[in-house]
Structure formats: structure tokens, C-alpha cells
Image 1 (cartoon, one colour):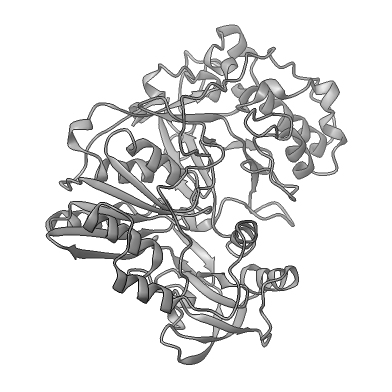
Image 2: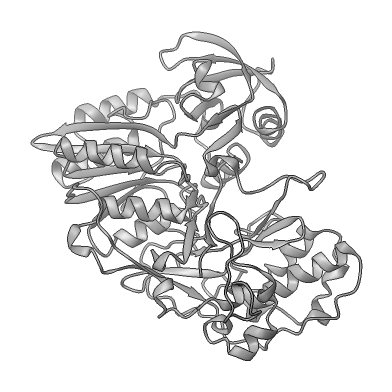
Length: 531
């Protein structure tokens, strides 16, 4: 990968990519800005931090030419780092929408950018979710509304506190901390967000299991290892073998488990694969490329998988600009987190971000296919929703030019951009710094990737249930080459999804996804390590 220069992290439920259905080669390329001028470094610690946030943005931000000058922006005038970051991200304009690329309706947070605070920062929490790094300290489950009156468990991590208490996908939540009126409204959403995803050490639940049996449980927040593979199976569809894997996050501890799962698919003669990414907001790019190489045709080995594009200033940065660049203050660390000696670099001692080659033609910015394993697929299906983001979208977009790909569900989040961390005092800043495009030059899916078959999911069904709506459409296509579900299964679907309440609207589903799955990181992070 990139001559071992970068280790990629997509933390991407939505880390970076915004995908569109009929994506064309992106024509949105930032123009070259004037080299940023660094003001005299004087002021309080807080003021210097605010200066750095803006000045790094002027050089690194993918849409840096939209930013005003230091004197006009006045970074020290903002009441908080978050207020400054939000303001900084609202200058760019997406010509397709007329709004900033990072605009989110009814929100004061940018769509992509965020801060990850160190443990030493009092009163602050990190946005880079722990589960992407292979461990978590929470209850280990998430909830969603199947209808406005039907609150269900969406997923449960294996061996998590929730799993230990018997919760599974499809369980109907009837009470939370004694509260039985859980009908969808803003008040209840706030209550659930605090009760399940807040800092409480435990939550008391009453629920009906997937068979309808009433149960109660007290779930205690505990540290556990995250296993992002929630379910696998192989189905016999006429003479075909169709594999199914639910992959919930591109964590950095999934490599061995993924290899084992795909090896099992190959051993069983799987020729078509369903990859369930409905809740996967992203994670490590290295994990995404692993899945891509496990699924891709062997004939693609050596061909371009995707290319990373930085802003025009970085692409053409001169030697003089490198020496004056604020990037010279960001050391490039090795895998052990140590400085790397680089006497011919900008500072003559160790490698820094100012020493990197940001040209799209540089080998370090071109990912190549390298087939892994023996699985030979004729077709791959992705089950997706508005929570499918970043590394998930990168995976889909990279495979589209090289094999038959079918998307089932609803339009994805839309995050075709990624970032690497920039350390500023006690925080790491993540802002879009590059966009990825597949081997056909297709990227720019800021409005999400469109689906081939539109459908809502059925939260009353377990993962792997052949009558669960999204999976049923994939299996139907594998059987007939169409998304027409046989009459018997259509009857089963309609019978199983009868409810006492109305379905949520698309906008309401978005609200629920954001508020009732806040641990679902949406991003694609690239961490430079080696020069």
C-alpha cells in the first residue's frame, strides 16, 4: 500500500466519502490559493490553538480556497474551538446543492470535520469512537424505530454487556429506566440518547425477545473487545452458493477474522456475496482495502484501486513553500509513534507533513489492487442505508468498475473525502484533506451512492433471516436476476411487518440514526507514518 508510506484509517460511517448514484468524474477541484501567512506567535494558549486551527485549514482543507484571510476570519474571536471549526467549514459551496459541502440541516456541527481530544483535556470527549480502534466501553448495542411506536434493537456486538444480558437484533424495547412511553418524538429521542448513550454506568431495560417473550435486564457499561463481524452465513439459491456477512465497522482488529470468513466462503464454493454495511460508518482504510482485495477479481492485481487527490496548493507546493509551511510542525511518526530521521527533509532532522508528495501521480497516492485469498465472485451485493459512509462507500466505489455490484436499501451518507489527524496542543483535528476516486476517475458522491433497489429495512428480523427485507431482495436477485420476491416470501414479508404505528419519514430516520447511534463513527482517516 502506497509504498508503506501511509497507514489508512477510515472511520467511515459516515470518514469521508459522499457518494452519488450516477457519479461522473469530479470537476470540483479547489483552485490554488495564496500561500498562508503565519501571524506572530504570541497570545494565550487558547488563542494560539485557534490560530493553528485556521492556519492548518488554510493549507490542508480540501476546499481551502473558500477560506478568507486570517484578518477577515479572526480565529481568536470565536467562543470555542468547535464554533471556529463550524464557521471554517461553512464557506465552501457545492454547486449541486448551493450549500456548503459540510452543511447539515438543523445542525451546528459540520458534516465531516471534528476534533478528537486527548485524555488530558478536561471536560472534553473524543469524537474518534473507541470501537473503531477495536475496543469500547459502553453497553454494546444500538436502537432504532421500526415504526413510531415500535422501538427495536438494531444490533448488538458479540460479547458486549448487552449480549451478555441476552439482547439481540429485533428485540422490542418496552421500557427504559422505567419509562414505558417511548413513542417517537424529540423528548423521547433526547431521553433515549442520554439513557443508552450517555455517561450512565448502567441502564435498566424491559424488552420482548425476538420470539415475543418478555424479559428484563440491567446492562452495565464495561470495556470489551469489538468484533465488527456480527453475522455470517451461506445460502443455497438453486445451484448457487451465496455468502452473507454483516460487517459493522472498519476496525483495526478485524484482519484475521475477515480472512477466516472469506476463506470459509471460498471453501463452500460461494460465487455471489452479500455484504451488509447498513450501519457501517467507516473506519480504517487499510481494513477497507483488505475487504476490497478479498472480493475483487484476481485479474485486477496491479491495477489502480483508487487515487487520493489533495487541494491544488498541496499538489504543486514548491520547495520554498514547504520550508515556510505550517506543516513542517507536524512530524511524520513511524508505527511505534517515534520520529523518523530524515536529514534531507524540510527541517533537516526528521520527517514532517511538509515532506510528503501530494501529487495524484505519486505512487504514494495511488492504491493498487492485490488480490487476497481464493474467493472468486461473479457478483457482490451491498445492503446500505443513510448510515453507510466513508470507508464503506470507498469499498463500494472501488469495486464498481471491476465487477458487478448491486446496492439495496437507501442512498448512502455521502463522504468521498478523508483526512489524517493534525495534532494541535491537546487535540487532533480532522478536516477533509483529500478526495478518493476509483480507477475510472469516479468520486464526488457528496449526496450519497444511489441504490439499485430502494427499500426500508425490517428491524423485527434477525440478521440472516431470509425474510428480512434487504437480504430477501439480494437472495431474490441471486435466484432470478430481478428484485421480484416470490409470492410466498412476499406474503411472509407483509405479515411480519404489520405494526401498530406509522413508518418514520426519511428525515426522521436520519435524526434517529444520528441521535440513537452516536457511537457509529462516520469517517475515513489516513494516518501518515513513514517517509
